Structure formats: structure tokens, C-alpha cells
Length: 294
Image 1 (cartoon, one colour):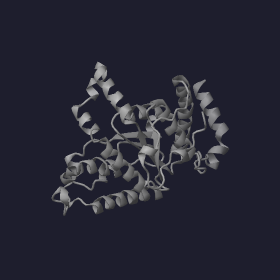
Image 2 (cartoon, one colour; image 1 turned 90 degrees about the vertical axis):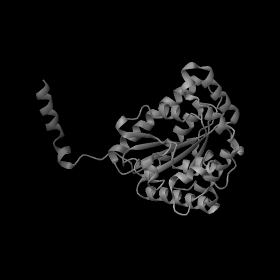
Image 3 (spheres, rainbow, N blue to C red; image 1 turned 30 degrees about the vertical axis):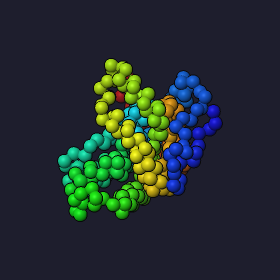
Image 4 (cartoon, rainbow, N blue to C red; image 1 turned 135 degrees about the vertical axis):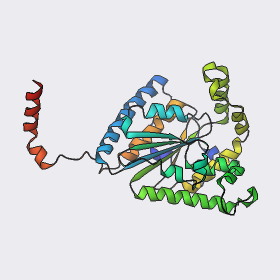
């Protein structure tokens, strides 16, 4: 297996998703992939602990992908060793009435991680240029000025949204949030297999909806919308990474390696030193505690 490099997965310029692999093919057994992930996620947890103490950066991890791409299980497996106080996961569903009464980015602003913490967005603000572009009628529920019908939603409208998203990400990046955006890239064939498993396994039946097949019929539309959104919003401060995800264990390892490679470039992230008075009296404090517990 060759070393995983973040640059190999970073989206740059105008992209065509058909040109990206959906399987990394590391030729490693499941057991070896799990062992590698276990080691890397402990390193990620160690970094997060230091970052929490340092308190000057936040990390926002955005995870997007077609249905069945493995978002939920990836979040569970990659971040399971992080201190619970240091990571917050938000799964964004259909906007509520209250959320629709605000700017579409509002619910994402208020969910941003505090400095020192990891925030994971399971589905993200990009739903507003993905699902809504495939189903533009959804935009009408936002009750926007000058948008009275689907015919009012022009290409200029979508360009404005891409610009707004870029500005949103630049703003939070400039204020200390490191942004990582991951597209879990699966093949249509693999999605079909995973949907079938939901039907074949009684314990998975609850995950299946007839609407899944309706959305699957729009596969090409979604691929085009993803490619356009990624092309227009992959920036130096908020890069997109396209992660081959037909093999879930490989995709988890790739994502973790990318996070570690990029985050460890933050050389100023160090645990704060004790103040001089505490350092000078540390032996005295130890002696005091030893006496109390003896």
C-alpha cells in the first residue's frame, strides 16, 4: 500500500466525477485496514486534546455523499476515540419552519464548533446547492423575495449561492476554523448493492424508503450538481477531497489520514505551559496532596 497523501484526493479546478475512482484498492485485508485506522484515530484524538487545550482553532469537517455512501458509519468509526467534550456532530435534515424563516446558512452558522473543538456536519450547507438544484421547487419554501416560481431560479441564482458559500467559509476560516470537505464517492452499482442489503436484512429495513429509488433514478443529475458545486467551491482555505468509498474501511482510513496530514501542519498548536508561580510550587502541591491521601 502506498502512503496516503491528501493532495492525491484534493479537488482542483473544474472536475468530472467520472474521472475519479470509487475504490482505492489498497489490497489490504479488512483486519489490516481496521488496525491502521485504530492507530490513526488515536493520533487524531491526541491532536484534538492538544487543540482543545490550545484553544485557538476549531475544525469543521463537512461530509457529503449520495445515499448509502457510508456517512453515518464513517463518523462513528473515525471519531470514536475523541473526547466527547471535544467533538460535536450535527446531522442536518429537511429545514424546519423556523430555519426556513432565516437565511439558508443560519442553521449552519449556529452549529459551528467552538475554538478547541471538532464539528462534524453530516450533510451540510451544500444541500442548498445540491438537493435544491436537482429539485428547484424546494427553493420556493424559503419564501425569498423575487422568487415566485421555479422559472425565477436562474443560473445567476446558483452562482450567487456558490459565492455566498465561499464567503461564509472564508469568514470562518479567517477566524480560526480549519475546514475540510469530503465527498464520499461511490459507484451507482455499489449504491444498488447497499440499497438491496437494506431490503434483504430485516434489521436494516427501517433505513429503506421508496423515495431512495426515486432519487437513485436522478443519479446523473446529482453527479453533475456535485461536480459543479465541488468545482466552484474547492478553495485553498476550504478544500474538497474526493474519497473513494465503495470500500467503507478504505474511505475511513483515507479521511483520517488526510485530517492528520493537514492538521499536523499547524505547528503552533501546543499545550499551554503552566504559569511561573505554579511551576515553582509544583513540588509543594504534590507533597500537600500526598499528605491528604496518605
